[in-house]
Length: 309
Image 1 (spheres, one colour):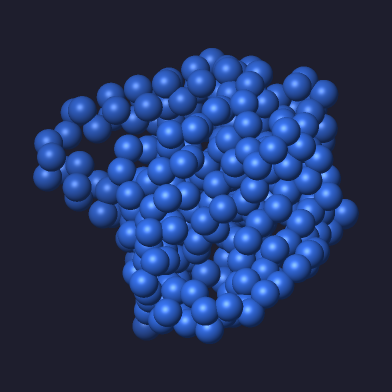
Image 2 (cartoon, rainbow, N blue to C red):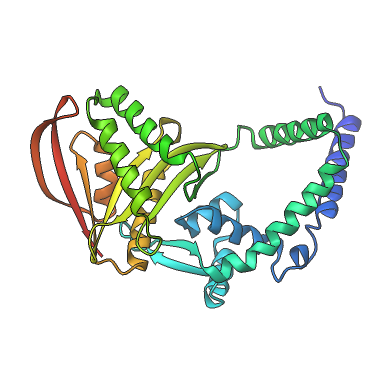
């Protein structure tokens, strides 16, 4: 049994730590790190930048914000040109949020100041003390939450080495899950090689999904013609499935295609890829044609899907 005195002391200790932590990081300051934004506003901007295709519902849930309060923040950001809204093709009640160039410019100084602040705090500690501090933070997060916190998935541009990873993981996963072999890896390698050699940032874009420092997904949007873009190499690792990542990657392609003035998006897939087909159908793609054939060492049904923008 916990006696009253020790319990009260523990409550006091937690409250003391809260006061220390909020004062140390300047959480109570009206302007976060001498910026035009409060801490909450800066967090919202950060989440929009980190998550390509986040919705207001996602952000309100993950930051535990009142929906009305968040809506006022988003309206102000939109009026100031810091963010843009794009209606979801699957659910017209939802808008996907993304950061504009102006928003990225406004957030950049905050990133630098936050990095410098935390870096200065850690610099006073030895390597062992830093490891102990970070481990303690993880322990607090896990125990207070009651369960391990869900890992955040971010979408980012490809980095050196990512294109090779895309080819390797397609070959490995499709061989294991569908028995595809023979020329499949070569097809993926050719698609990636074409992307790298013909890349034009005005018309082409690639995304890598990252979780806990590791790659868990990919997709590419490339120019097929002046009016048509092609979605290629959508992949979601097993560890990241069930979290809507396929939809986020697909919606990122659709938004980019609209921004670049394409009139439609096309893609090539196979009937056995039921999860991907479901994502495409929800996003508004429609099956244009299909053909039974022998490919990748298997009997498959090849499909072509189109989305009018």
